[in-house]
View 1: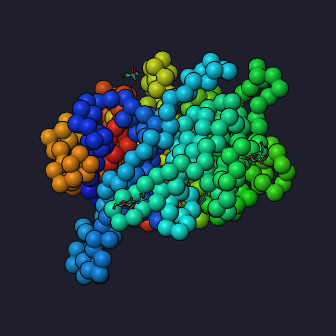
View 2: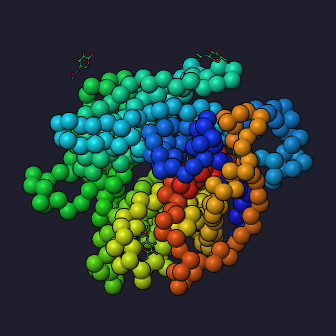
View 3: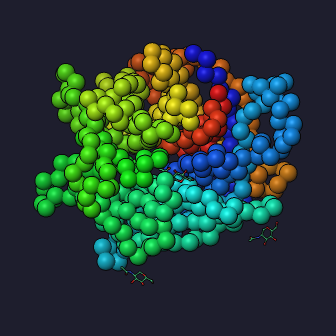
Length: 436
Ligand SMILES: *[C@@H]1O[C@H](CO)[C@@H](O)[C@H](O)[C@H]1NC(C)=O
Ligand SMILES: *[C@@H]1O[C@H](CO)[C@@H](O)[C@H](O)[C@H]1NC(C)=O
Ligand SMILES: *[C@@H]1O[C@H](CO)[C@@H](O)[C@H](O)[C@H]1NC(C)=O
Ligand SMILES: *[C@H]1O[C@H](CO)[C@@H](O)[C@H](O)[C@H]1NC(C)=O
């Protein structure tokens, strides 16, 4: 109850500086979203290898009047507002001649790093190569320059990158290994986790996601395809195959169907801001884990239980392998994750909270946006529409018969603003901001 939402649709497709790009194009599909620590910047990455940067505008504009504003119109005026600032080509398609493999330019993850001397830094990665960008600003624009390229360290597909709170190192994880890098040294990395068996036929699980603890620079967590999370301490040994803590749910009674293992696979993990909790997403649920309690999750939120009767179809067309991300609010009070038909779900995670809200990223943002090309900043500004949506619980009508589901529209990527009660999520090539 009580999670009222305002939707601002940000037309992503009109950012290309070329009106022809309004035509739906697969390269525009957003594949990564990340707020920086202050929440003043938002970055998206797409299948075409581009990174687009947005900057918060409402703070600056309101300036000294902020106080009055808060007094008079507290609930409505404090939406963070973002404006398109710049975009750059982070990755290009490549060909690995040694392995005869095409390397897609698609951005898998973006992570903001420490700011220094007014410059912003971020890491972006595709399947194989990580890049470190420095973004400097002056009066009107942001300019991105590539500082480092970390290549040739991953034989498998990179699924995660995570900067460390020490401000000097980061990790990159692929299906079988996790490497530790120093930001300033691009020609060498240290392998810290290796789950590759001597014989690949013995392979039973892969690494699916990894991240540093937000404040303990020696601690990191990674998740696996069988549904476990491991917390490791970098001080214990150079190669951290001996995890320091294992988080796993005991098999639920009646489990053990053909799909059990597939749907147990964790697609994303995130630490809460204080590092006490880890949120994980598997195909059916969100789980919240207390790192001091490895007997099981402290909460489990049902996201896709209604799909259980249809797992066979979902397997047939690979939808069961969709990798949904998850996020926690800055205050740790809520968690969110995406679903099909451009829906996403928000849950309250207070003990005893029953809050569960289903929200929708507008069904057809493209069509609506084509009518509103920008005028004030030709082809570069965001035209946005705002509409208030008040929806509680199940009013979106999750159809138990499944007829209304659209498995081709899925909301995989989302991020919670670090300080405000607002969420950014991507549906295809559109970016949406939701404000509580
Ligand atoms: C990553 O960088 C940010 C600075 O933007 C820092 O606050 C944070 O502690 C770093 N590490 C993690 C795990 O987020
Ligand atoms: C990395 O590059 C630096 C400077 O170019 C060089 O001194 C160093 O030997 C290189 N290290 C490795 C492991 O290749
Ligand atoms: C997957 O299967 C479901 C159920 O048969 C169907 O409704 C959906 O359109 C399919 N999705 C894709 C992407 O083919
Ligand atoms: C900062 O922007 C100004 C225009 O506002 C431009 O003249 C200048 O070259 C830019 N500086 C950098 C370092 O890009």
